[in-house]
Length: 233
Image 1 (cartoon, rainbow, N blue to C red):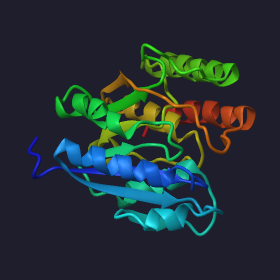
Image 2 (cartoon, rainbow, N blue to C red; image 1 turned 135 degrees about the horizontal axis):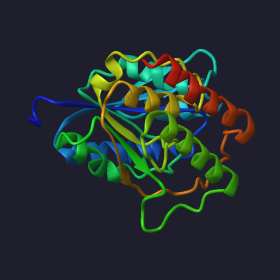
Image 3 (tube, one colour; image 1 turned 90 degrees about the horizontal axis):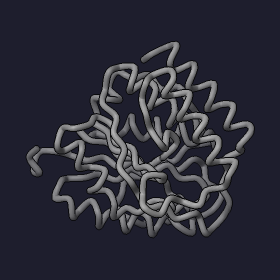
Image 4 (cartoon, rainbow, N blue to C red; image 1 turned 30 degrees about the vertical axis):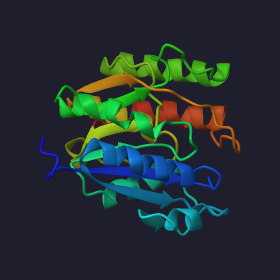
C-alpha cells in the first residue's frame, strides 16, 4: 500500500478518563506518525462528567461529544460513521493499551494476511493478571464464538483492534455497550473475513475503576454473540 494514499482512522471512545486521555492521544499521535501513513484520530466523548472532553479538545484531533451517556458500543459506532480511512483502529482511553504497539497490529493488514486484527492480552509471554471472574468470562465467550463460527481466538473482548474499512462497510452494528466487540467479531467471521490475533502488552488500569459489570454486561455479551450469529450481518 502506498503511504501517501492510504489514511488510517483511529477511534477512541471516552467516558470519564481525564487522568489518561491526554497521554493516550499524545502517544497515539506519535505512534501514528511513525507509521508513515496519513492518519486521523477521532475522539468520541460519551458525555463525560469530568474534564475528558476539555482535555481532548486541547489536542489536534477530531472530537465529537454525545449529548447523553449511552455506552461504549454506541460511542464506537459514532466514531466509525465519522471515520474516513481505509484502515480503522480502535483503542481504549484508560491507558491499558500501548499506542506504541500499533505497528504490530497493522502488519497483518498491510501484508494482506487479515481483514481484522485483534490485540490479544493472553498471547504475550507475560499474560495479563486479570481478575479470575473476568478471565473466566472471556474464556466462555471465546468458546461460544468458536462453537458458532469456528473462529479460534484467545481474546474476543479486546478493544485494541485494526481492521479494513471494508469489514465495517456492509455491517450493521447494534450494540450500545461492551458487547460491541463480540458482535463485531461474530459478524466479521460470518461474512467470511479473515481474523487474526497478535500479542499485546496490557497495563491494568491504575486510575479510576472499570465500569464493566461482570454479571449484567456478561449476559449482554452472551446474548449479543448468539444474536449476531443468528442475524449474520
